[in-house]
Image (cartoon, rainbow, N blue to C red; front, side):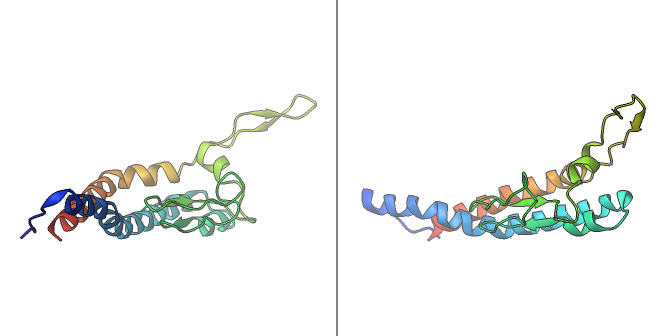
Length: 152
C-alpha cells in the first residue's frame, strides 16, 4: 500500500525519486533488449559471411558503457543512462555499412564498371524483428519503476 505523503517537501522528495527508480528498472530491460537484437543481427549477417569479421564485430553496449572503436562514425560513444546500442565494426571489419546498404555502380577511370554489391541488411531487420517486444518491455519497466517509486 502506498504511503500518504503530506506537505510539499514530502511530495517533492517522492517526485524526485521517480526518475532514479525508473532508470533502475529500465537498465535491465535495455540490456536484455540489445542482447536479443545483437543476436538476431549476428544471425542475419551470416548470409554475408566471407571471413566472419563482420559477424564477430557486432557488439551490444549497455547504459553507461562505451562502444568499441570503429563502431560509430569511426570512433567511440558512451551510452547515456537510458540508452543502449547495437553496433558493427572493428579494425578488421570496417565494411558493415556497405553490407547493410549495398553499393552503387562504380566505374574505373577507363569507364568499365566495377560492379554492384547488393544490400544484405542485418541491423535494421534485427531491430524490426524485435521492436514490438522491446517497446513493450521498456514500457513495462518504466511503469514498474514509477509504481515502485510511488509505493515507497
